[in-house]
Amino acid sequence: IDTFFSSKDMALKAQKKILSSMANRSSVQMFIDDTTSEILDELYRVSKEYTGNKAEAQKILKNLIKIAVKIGLLFRNNRFNEEELVIAKDFKKKLNQGAMTATSFYEVDFTFEQTVMSDLLSDCRDLLLKLVNTHLTTKSHDRINRVFNHYSDPQLLTKLYDPSGPFRPHLTKICKGLNKLMEDGTI
Image (cartoon, rainbow, N blue to C red):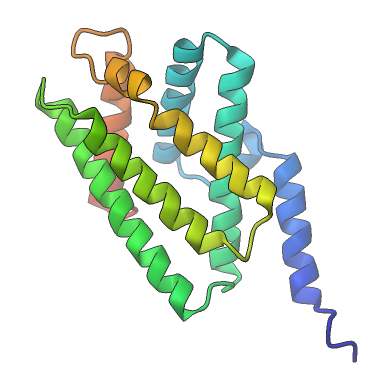
């Protein structure tokens, strides 16, 4: 038996490759629940309105979805070792902290601190990059950086959290979804 060939590895590579090419709304619904989908829709709207560029907003969201689905595949296929599972746990804690902070800033007007939110997002990005370091390609690492850099943009965050700003309805729906995911224990 060839020790360098693994059908399980080949199947995982094939799944990741297929998912890379089919990250659209209908196929993603197999992997992402309704609440997360609603949050993603609002993040898309925020990105589209902020950048003024529909194609750029779609690319950012497609990258976010690809990352989430690939990491989900790695988890389902037990690809993370013990050390990486600790990193994953730290990531989930940091993500939960970010969600609680995001909703707190939303619920209490004029408490938003851009540096706090940017730092939380940067910490999440760094943990995620560490988690997938040996599992995903450089292209996927670049996607992670682009997504997190976009959503941690100080100007975007400031606009998003402006109580009388145009993004308020989107933030309302995002925070409602985050609260539901936290109550469910998803994040």
